[in-house]
Amino acid sequence: MVLLAKGPKLKIFYASDIHGSERVFRKFLNAGAFYQADALIFGGDLTGKAIVPFVENTAGHFTADIFGVLHEIESGPALVELEQFVRDRGSYPYRTTPEEMVALQASKDLVAQTFTRVMAKTAEDWVTLADERLRKAGIPCVMMPGNDDEHEVKKVLAQGDWIQDGEDRVIDVRGFQVASFGWATTTPWHSPREVTEEIMSQRLSDLTSLLDPNIPTIFNMHDPPAGSGLDLAYKMTSDMKVEMAGGQAMLASVGSTAVRDCILKNKPVLSLHGHIHESRGSAKVGSTLAVNAGSAYTEGVLQGTIISLRGSKVTGYQLVTG
Image (cartoon, rainbow, N blue to C red):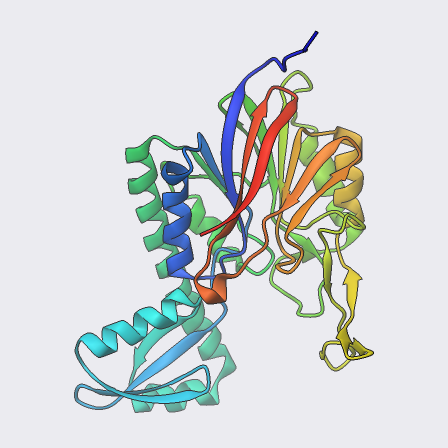
């Protein structure tokens, strides 16, 4: 006799860590319809990390150092195309003057302020686009900031009137409860949203106290569980170089023990993760399927996963690239 899973059905598309790539973000918005998903879930690290100045030295003539290559461009289609090239790879083109450029070079605070302003405006535009596209398609979308997103990003996501900022909340998605947490434990890069394992454990306990034990649960947690194989990152030396042995880059487990313990205690049907781009894959943590979708945002490629659920069972999943 075959026993069929019972309960609500859901097919989701999940991705994470697009780090400001406009091309990848647009692919994410289109993925719901393309893969015939019932819902989209985004796992954090939405925004980019740098602005690229386009300096207008004379009227209509710009210079820009793009990833180590100096470009001289006139106003027109070539300039627009080059700016889009920068956006698609996760940075923010910024038109400026020689005078402002001198001021930027002299002040780290001014650089930080300018970056935050440009980043936040771009994120606002993305939220508006997501609201329009996904409302029209009728596809719910749960998003959250990651550890690399500045605190301003959470305020921007809260402005969405179709997409939902799921962080520190439990959101109903077609009969499943999605619990999201985007902070990570400490990293060598001192990113904006990091906490200790002790604080992580307490905050996850606060979040999971909101769960209904009678409703199937999906975790959306940026940091992967420690020791799962979804958390293997390049091991860094004290001077921030990749540690090598026998000509091979060394890997180390850098995931969160608090996340692992939270999964083992609460036994969600599914646990979704990002953060460690090179650890794309799936693993079992206790009885729970855990997935890290990976990231290849610098190439303009969307890495994600399609997962089908029925009640307390995962009925199928596939890692996809597009």
